[in-house]
Image (cartoon, rainbow, N blue to C red; front, side):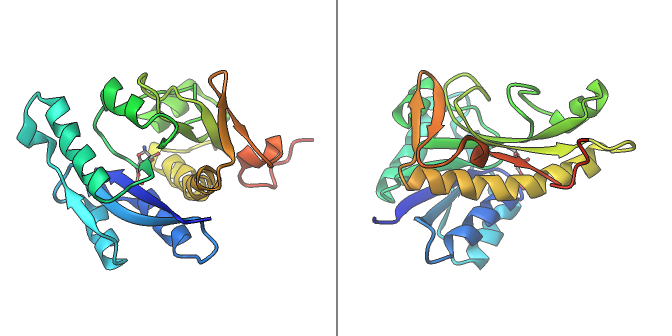
Length: 221
Ligand code: GRF
């Protein structure tokens, strides 16, 4: 099967981007990272991508003012020019219009730092600590027009520990993110993901393959 061509959209440090690039550097991985695109010219992830010999582009949303369609038309032009099959959002901090999202239906993934549908939106780690939840985590999902709401592909759970700060919790969650995003993209590229009645079904994988609990030595008895 031909390797799929992936674009990763970032706005910041790009650690998930780097995890995807590293996964795709394996021969057996079914995708190539063909492009990293940022809306922020000095996003840290751009130099990381360049150091890994990945093509980068910048489209600064500020140049388009309130014209979100114009901004997205430029993005679409670059995605088309690079013959992109699938797009991964990885810390891309712009909302995308329903028309862009519909165009990429079933081909656009996002990673969110919480166990959706809990804690949609920003500041997820602060809010998880404030609510006193015992389990937090991350979710890879298909993107739909409503923010942080698309069909869930994989989730990773981590414990929230006494004394956790948003930083310490975030450090635990991000490690899990780096494991589940490459897994979800692999399944997408292998054609294993289907959306049925608004939910994601993974062909040829058991239900628990879409769940990661970390660390695995949680004492449950
Ligand atoms: C991650 O926590 C991701 O879940 C969220 O934005 C953050 C991006 O981090 N969407 P990085 O740029 O991948 O390090």
